[in-house]
Length: 178
Image (cartoon, rainbow, N blue to C red; front, side, top):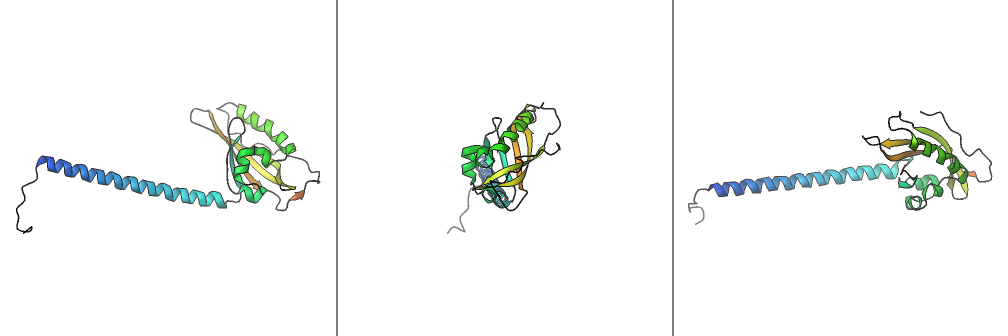
């Protein structure tokens, strides 16, 4: 019977193999826990990104949109994929874009050791056949070496109701730099 049988003592090789198995099991468990933590973090981030009212976007050094939050659809009636493909032109009126571009290029050209040059601008956004005023705060995100990583923009609606495009409002006014 199995209960009455005497087993030989464990050898050093048996003990080493057991320690390796325990170590591997521990590493697998840690990896699984880390993967679950990443999935939970992604779920929280997605929930935030999909439900925040403000639009978050990033631009590269050529002012191409590299990320835009899904909330852009609520503010501009233009989905995020379309904005990624067409750029700022998809959501900003031509007059406002003509005013914004030089300011963004100036921000990019500032020295890496310059203080954070966040700028808040009033911009006219396209919304179907209408426009709506929004406040956009741009700042340059730099790495530890001072090199530009991205321009981050946060768009907050200023006026809830869209205005017809025939309204001749000033395209943009620049707030004092923060």
